[in-house]
Image (cartoon, rainbow, N blue to C red; front, side):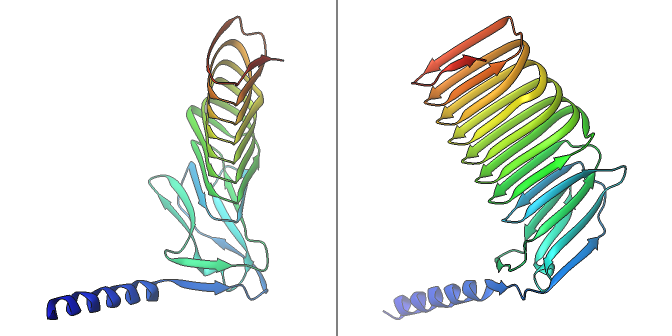
Length: 240
């Protein structure tokens, strides 16, 4: 019996300690914009409800704006060549002013978005390798770029990806109800795979491999002569 009471007390103590580690901060409504020093990076990960605005430049830089008392709770750290934008661990912040992170970068090897925020950019961004663009959640990535050798775009959830530029190859995948729009990416070879109800739009000028499992649709334009389709469900592959 003593042992049971001891274990129950231990569980209560651990639970209380876990609660003490969580914190919530409301914005004070006082607008502030600050510049942050960072190292070199070519990938960007954002997890939260804030927006990330991308601009092209020869050197990397970061500015962040929002409620002055909340900025310290948003981390912008470079780890393994990737800029991670996230709230401090166990934090719950509620802003009055919209939080926006401004990022200047030249080469982009990866964009990763989770949460409800958006990531938007326009410029002569480039990459001679594969550029990964991934959304998990309800947010959107919208990017107007120069040239990426290859693009690997994926959506898991209800979010969306909209791209414009030039690429040799585009691989687009959806799992869920989201959407990928690459119809303004001038590309040679395309693979488009859907699992769920989402839609993919692409431009293929040499070949396209379209696979659908579910009710989603794949729409393609371009002069692709090599067209392969595989369907399991009510989804359609439509040219035009």
